Image (cartoon, rainbow over all chains, first blue to last red; front, side, top):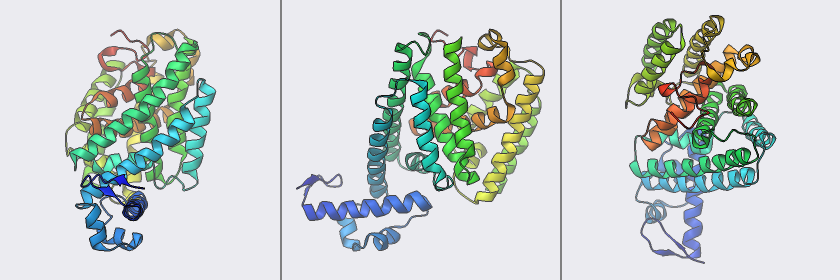
Length: 208
Length: 149
């Protein structure tokens, strides 16, 4: 099996792809737990067990590695969210989506936050390419939420004049901000409150 | 980091104390959006998930309390001035100042992150439109539920 290497466009051998994946997986874990800024390439080398020359064969440097981590995390999050939101068409379904996110985050007392949101809050002013990649991923995620809200609207649970994109963006901000508050408080409660308040507002629109 | 926290709290304490109606709340909101869209402003630096966690937790608790006091004051004075909520009195009574403050702080936090990566104030404004809906302090006073400005 071969796959395109984003660094030099060459085809990778199965072994090369495996090495690259190992580096990205190790970097993803380290950056999730201790942050992008605090993660050094030496730590990634140690955690992945690859040599320095292998790492530089796949990545020009830290920026390139961070972009690969963004792609990797983004793919995982979008897949999870597509699975969770793809068929939701009721407020009750949205609440189940909320329950799963809050419960998953509560396991770690909210300490690490949203894998994608944490990357967004750290790299936004450092690397334009990373920022654009994150922006696209969040647009895609919000698109999944907007599709749910549109199905609610089609089912009559939201008034026809409700601005779906605005509500989807507001809900995403409540979710991401909630993750960040929970991360700082080491307590998942503010995240739950924030999403609940946003969902309660969306639900209240149908009663008007 | 401590200095950014102190500076934001000092400014917020002064500005929020003067918020006594929907129009002044909208003015507060416009100023905070401007601060959060200014690279390396004390607000942007204070919002970063970096530095000492207990210091940041204390900063966010204090800011949330300032916002909650303001929300409570607006609710006490009956300043909702909002077309949605006036149609259903029970909604207004349901507004919980502490929980509303959590949502507003989350909207500032999450909204500014989305705005920074898209380099566009629109997401932050959409987030605040939702969070401040009970007070109709939306941009251009346009209710979020309506597409027409």
